[in-house]
Length: 273
Image 1 (cartoon, rainbow, N blue to C red):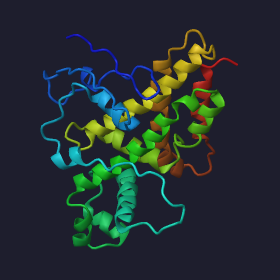
Image 2: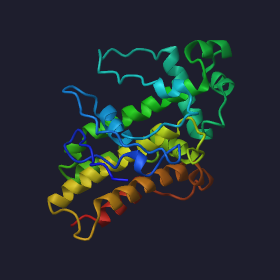
Image 3: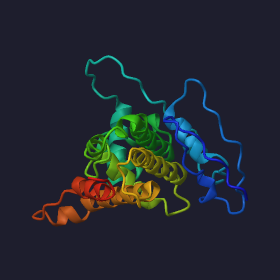
Image 4: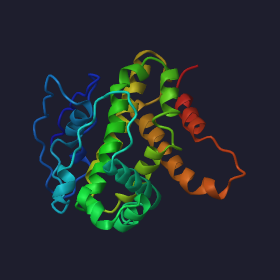
């Protein structure tokens, strides 16, 4: 099979290899379609996900509702603080329980109790747990979109990357903990979020690779360093440390660790100076 050309992303660099070339939910059914062309006004994360997904055959048993639920990213509105809606409270509770127990370990009734809402009230907002998971993953995609939009800024200096490692990529923060739990769960081919979580991991790896490639072009990377390898290694460490923060660290409260510094040291090992 001929490998398709890589598709460009928002920063003009080639996109990551389409997911279908090494991950398929239907054996023997990898059909590569022409690379999609971005519209003049497009959402970067949506374009990245399309580039990652070109030619992939989605699993036949993936619930239709989770494939079709893609909440648009909200643009900045008035600065007046507003109380979260009941729907947002449910999403907060679901995201917290999914991060702690995983998708299969948290029932709708568990989430209802966490939020303080009746089960029928929960179903009024989300018809099924698969739909709820889809909306939680929307939040993870919005998180990735923010990083994707910042590739040019992150490429400006290692200090900017350090700030991102201590901010949106901080392994101690909720979203990274949530992503790490769901990423571990999708080794199960029947997991309803398998397709979108796998794509998200590739998006994060591509963002890091784009930044490191820019450093390489500026002479900031060690000559023998491979940006793709360093990106995969750094993001794998991020997810691993996020798991450690939820498991080992609570059992060793007297042991001081700094997961952000651990990732920073790994990345800087491949940087000059």
